[in-house]
Amino acid sequence: MTVAVLALQGAFIEHEHVLEELGVKTVELRQAADLDQPYDGLILPGGESTVQGKLLRELKMFDPLKKQIADGMPVLGTCAGLILLGSPEHFGTIPMQVKRNAYGRQLGSFHTKAEFKDLGLVPMSFIRAPYVESVSDGVEILSVVDDHIVGVRYGNQVAIAFHPELDSDRKIHQMFLDMIS
Ligand code: GLN
Image 1 (cartoon, rainbow, N blue to C red):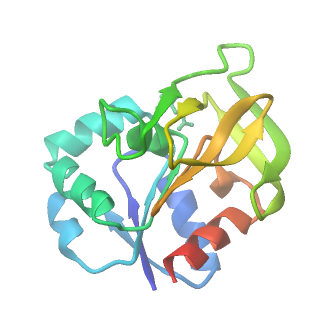
Image 2: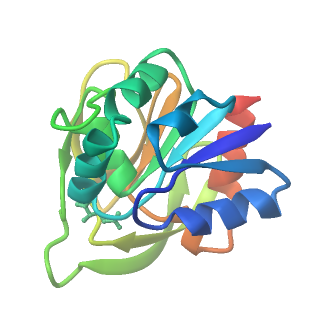
């Protein structure tokens, strides 16, 4: 199995390390030509969604990547990746409303442990995180923290507001790999 990691900006190397630790081959997506190689799943890392969206367009990766996702490529979006998937200014392939930098300045970054569907308690690191304000029909809610939705699944797409690659728990990545295979 090969998993591609969008490697334009943000915490992509951390995802690659986790995947390598789990014995999965990784490829980096840095330019449009990288989208033509074979891979079985895709990770959109945390970082800055505005910058990522701009680079995706400048590098002509936006449309082909959106098509791959719409055509069923398994995708895991974390933090900024959730914003790319959920926001109509970006891919907007998950019908939901996303609030960026949702926790304000005081709670800009925090760590907690919370229930995640089928996984039990999962450690969660939030860094200037978004949350999901509401979801349309068909979007499954996977996790809620303090009344805010922080994890969803919509068919082939999983989006979470936190950074699983920054904790040592591997349940989220394992769930994604199970989803691919
Ligand atoms: N605040 C960032 C954004 O709006 C997301 C933060 C993150 O990915 N850790 O894109």
